[in-house]
Length: 260
Image 1 (spheres, rainbow, N blue to C red):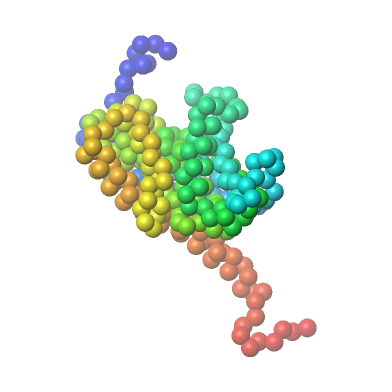
Image 2: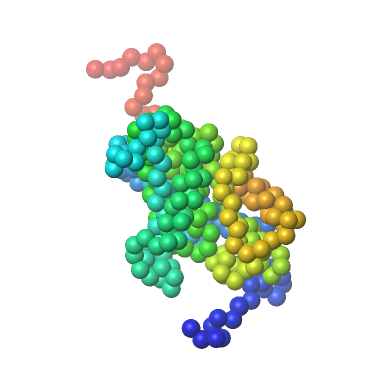
């Protein structure tokens, strides 16, 4: 890589807006579809900006290897993986990396605080998260997808989880960083919230913020997480609405006799 290619590119347009035209407190376009995999207990596809994240939940099921099981609760295992074609310049090889292992661990720990694992002793709940296309903020999109997939699988949880990143770009706090802003901005802070009580389930920091900036970032992130939560809820509602529409022609009206 040449010295010129290492120089920091401009992150703001001449009119002061971000490169994609968003304001500093604006999310990228976000859509979520639940129940997209036939054989998974629950699944979700999140398209967030240019990110495409697929999550599938399998279980509760027998915990293998047996020495990992707990007699008191289910073992929650999350595996975060970036497909080798998701961003060729950064992830051109297949297989686990230190980054994917780290994110698998922190995502698992975030959900351990909300999943009621005591309902399924001596079992395992496996969450597979695959990044099909990446453009910054994949861990937040992965947490968001995993939460919808777990809810779709009927796994009991104390709360839903929604995640969003807040960072610093050209000296200003910015919501939901793009890839360029993530790579070249001054700070990146992925935060996951419990949707009802606002409990922070995941907080990571890359770069530096002042105490006042951290407070502002938390306020921005919490408000944005509520918007993400509304989209999660709508995705799950659509699944059960479709299921009701399919079942309706086969059901009987009250008092109607079944014809032989």
